[in-house]
Structures are given as structure tokens and as C-alpha cells.
Length: 149
Image 1 (cartoon, rainbow, N blue to C red):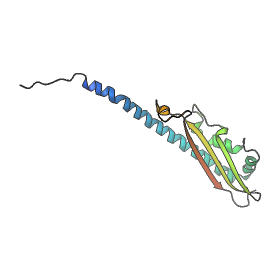
Image 2: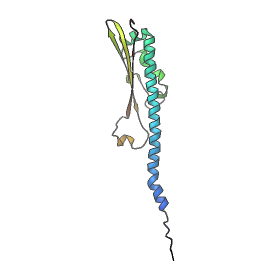
Image 3: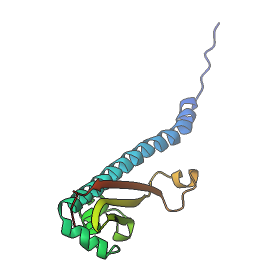
Image 4: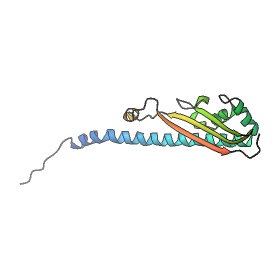
């Protein structure tokens, strides 16, 4: 005669062991997709502001004369629409405009922006020992048409 053993609660215990891992992975994938979206918005904003600079030469002169507060930084903020409504929005201090001048002629315009991404997955910052979040850095460098003053 065979006796069937019944394991009451076995599936409940297995579920309790696997459920936190599943939730951690789901929120981690959600965070990864948010980071990719924010990086895409940031790199697009930097590229568009650099393009704006090489097309509008008077903006290059203004940025060269006032590197800490110029319209190219404002353009990056305008184009980075996804980063404006975040808990840690992008600001002018996060945008660096570099201009190279040779013989009184501008040769390159380079814009770099840094955004501090804060994941919402519990334990990610502690796991990677992050104090302020993950820095997303986007940079764009474009050549200015020869003879641009």
C-alpha cells in the first residue's frame, strides 16, 4: 500500500522565497529603462544645442564671452524636456560649454552635460555604493565652418 505524502505549504514557502527576487528584477528593469530614456533625452539635447551653436555664430561669441551663463546652456535645458520634471532636474551648472579658438577663429564647439540619475529600486544605491546616484554624461563636439568669427 502506497501512502501519499502531502507537503502542506511547500508552494507558499517557495513563493515567499522567489517573490522578492522577482520584484527586485522587475523594478531593476524599470530603472534600466528609465535610465536609457533619460540618457537618450540628455544626448539629444546636447547634440541639438551643439548644432544650434554652429548654425548661430553669434551664440558662440556670447558663450565665449560668458562661459558660466549663456544661451547654449539654456538650449540644452530646453531640449532636455524629459529631465525637467524629475525630482533632480538638470540645471545650468550641469552643462559645460567648451569653445576652441585658433587665430581668432572658432574651430570646434563642445557641450557636455551631466545628469545624476537616482534609481528607485530598493538597495541598488547601497549595492553599488552610490552616494548621489548614477551620473549620465553626454557630450557632443562639432566643427565650426572655417572662417566663422
